[in-house]
Image (cartoon, rainbow, N blue to C red; front, top):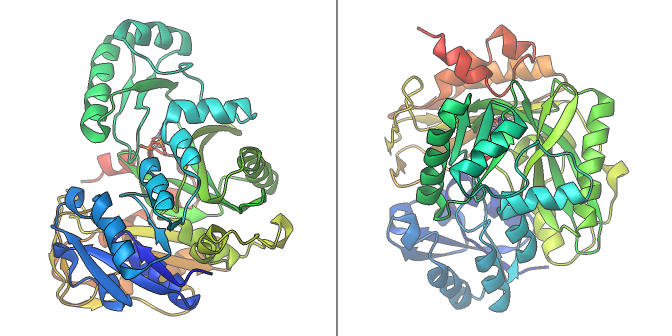
Length: 447
Ligand code: ADP
């Protein structure tokens, strides 16, 4: 087992990883920017190292600073968390070359899945259904026109290096294609420094269904069921639930086993998630995230498995020690992502927390690095808390969630808690009757 893990991240996920390490008897090293000197994960870690100024580029993305911090503290492994360096294959490789263990998949798998064109090709060859689209990258407007005519409108132009919903544009008709193509390329270049794009059929009303996977270094891969992440705004998840109210037991077993079998076929190790769109009873692969995901929590709640602990354990080379049949599913879980934003205009709202009270009680979990008096810095992602609730049934879960949101106090700044309270009160949500466009359509009709 590792003795000391460096956590190359910040915020709630750094704290989440620290907690798993602590329970495993592993010492932790927090690295932080000057803006995060007072952060909770820094306070709780055994050691901390300041790695740069507030700008992420000079701190949380600063490879020499992170590797130096690992060397001077004598860490034996690096956990990249979510975002920042977690899907940087070159960094993963450098970590290993410098003699540290990398708590994540092989650099090769990060590279393959990080390019969505290669990712789709890889899983297609292994028998996974993918969204119909271009065979590879689309290099010119002319090629885009030819592809769109073949695929049929509406079409979606997507960045090969995409993430966080950036570099994605819809063309509803031929007249919109040229502009959508140029916009997607421009956005991709700005966000990822890579303007390669590909095309997909724009599905009308799909749900976003994803499968949580875990593989060891010995060829065993298991799944922890699905998550329904269809409540989205600007292609970003807002509320997630497990299991999906849209799937029956047969579909659930089908897609879970298929995803696990595919990941095992290419020797995937560590935690990872295969994302699918689901429409009219069909699943279409869209991408694989080769890291922990924000919403891993709801899979933990319905299986009782600490996925971060398992991720760390398999990174040591330990065999999984259990199989698919040992993973038992129990009840229902929903997560709300709480952002430091105005709940109506979504204007960012960083600043000092004045009054903080997290809800509690049976089946309520808050993953957050907030505390009273903490200053939410303006430099990073706006997500400040995850409210995760478990119930024996979906209905119990919904009632509990409503009660927990009522109790949650985050004073001094605007948060999206009021938006969550309204979403979960909508009859469509209560009935589980929603797709990836539901939230934006509902918001459009609000006064
Ligand atoms: P990113 O990596 O930027 O998150 P994804 O490929 O995972 O991009 O897609 C994010 C979201 O965009 C999906 O959850 C879905 O809501 C929407 N989306 C992606 N591809 C399609 C498609 N072909 N048709 C309709 N919606 C799509």
